[in-house]
Image (tube, rainbow, N blue to C red; front, top):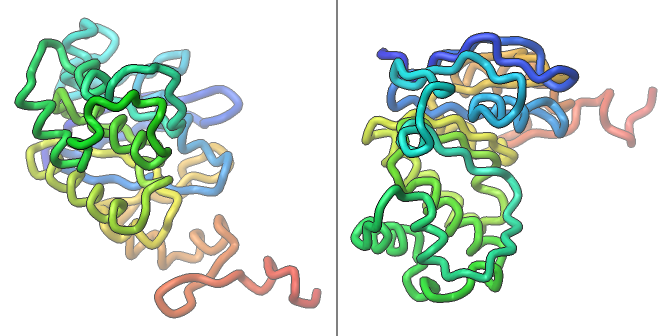
Length: 242
């Protein structure tokens, strides 16, 4: 498979140990790990937000050398926070992600994320889930080649989580690569690849089946398989004797 993302020496001192990463065109990568494991640090480093900047190229173009307009075409970063203090309409929030006026693109995104009826509402008056969809629409707007999404499925009801995964799959089919931090492990099997972090280290990189079924997964999360889900490992269960 053709590599889209080529990142070397990604590191955030005290939060993320150095690592190299390649992601293929159209590849959907879930980033998992306990709280504080380094998921957000990894995505922010790849987006060039965290200093020192890593050597990151998307489609052969170095992010550090790209103009702001070109950068929007290369990658988009969606933070985990859904707090928005701008009292501006949803339609205008989406437009902020575009280089030029594109009413047709905005209309398509409003429809895809069921925001048409809310398009003139100030974004800061929406529910958390509605704001999450508006901010995702903004990230998708310029059709970036790389999507870096930090917990995009949080604050969404189950139907919208699945619909969002379908939208992201569509972006992948169109050629985008995705790195998505995922809190709900039940959704991880919908990805092509899983990166598992623990204490700032990349400890597993493989298919969902391989990573979720590994002994390392149980050690990192303190759980073991139970039917279609997981249960606490005996040593992690506060009800168990020691």
